[in-house]
Image 1 (spheres, rainbow, N blue to C red):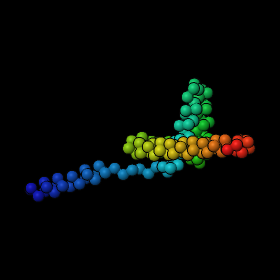
Image 2 (image 1 turned 90 degrees about the vertical axis):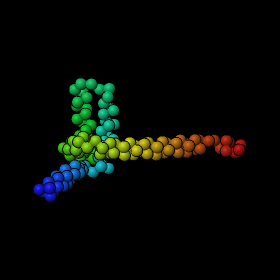
Image 3 (image 1 turned 90 degrees about the horizontal axis):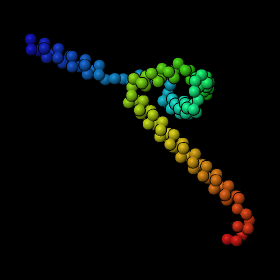
Image 4 (image 1 turned 60 degrees about the horizontal axis):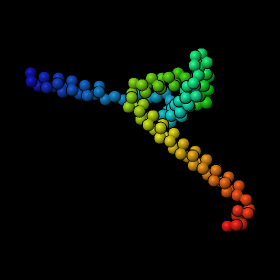
Length: 134
């Protein structure tokens, strides 16, 4: 009888542990593409902040349809992806952390590019006299 109890306990333990291992559902939209879409979505939402009422709803529909068209994504796939991520907060946090790092890197690169252009314009705008007097 004791062997049967031990076997049953071992079987139940294996089943419980196996059911606890959660596999990540595949996302309809690949993560790198999703990050680019999310950047555009957040930019559109920020642009709509001061707008109220029906105008905002219409503008949101227009912006989102353009975003999905630009990224060649169906709205249903985007919604399904976001629903999956809402059930997996750790995965959502990981994606947003990576997204934030990407945005910071792009911002830094853009700032450096602007600085280089400004320096180039400054050096071009120096008169020949300034160059000769040195």
